[in-house]
Figure 1: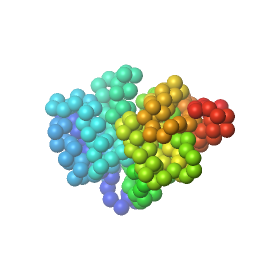
Figure 2: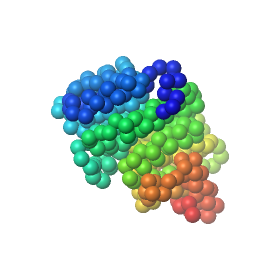
Figure 3: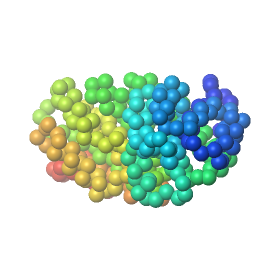
Figure 4: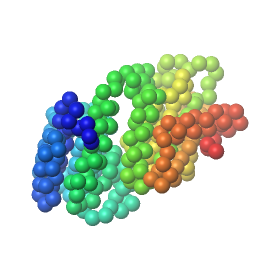
Length: 288
């Protein structure tokens, strides 16, 4: 990126692979371009070193000899010191299959990069990821997380939804948003909102983002989920909710690579569908 040298520190990339062919060249190019590169030759030390170094991007070899790479990606994604804002890219042998993409998306892998790599082509990709990661790190936690429920705030959810739509595009798959509102008499109590929040946290997938988007409204952004999957997701939460009834509105895009969608539009469409569901007396409604 043109302003790479204007960053307050060198961007950090962690590479975990025991294969030297091609990656030596990548290390040299990144070093010459101002990156700080940490190279590991096994999977075992990756999580500990990632906690220490706080990389801006992580490149994992899909064929690590000592540890399953998807399981490691799962562990990295769940670690609070690495978190959801750190892009994790998987280096794959040959062209990945739809099954490979689906498995990677579920554990939070942002993109699959077939080997061999072209450093000149990869550099702009890393630059974009670094800028997004640094921008996310600058946001105060209060702007991202709702203190009452521990879910994302509206701003935090919109930010995370943008990341998930990028991931869905890279994995050549769908994305959906479902907005929920428990049917209540009067304003929801703090205790009920906290209970509903815990229910969403317990029932959400690792690849989803869940936020509180209104006084008594909650939204789930789900990559790899089409319209049929959005209805199934809503039904799952409907069964789990502690409230007598739940209303939901949703919007879904079958393939965000070929039909790009803005995260704010996806959220707004689902919210509008919820309003229509309430007005029409339906428990669930699609955006049309």
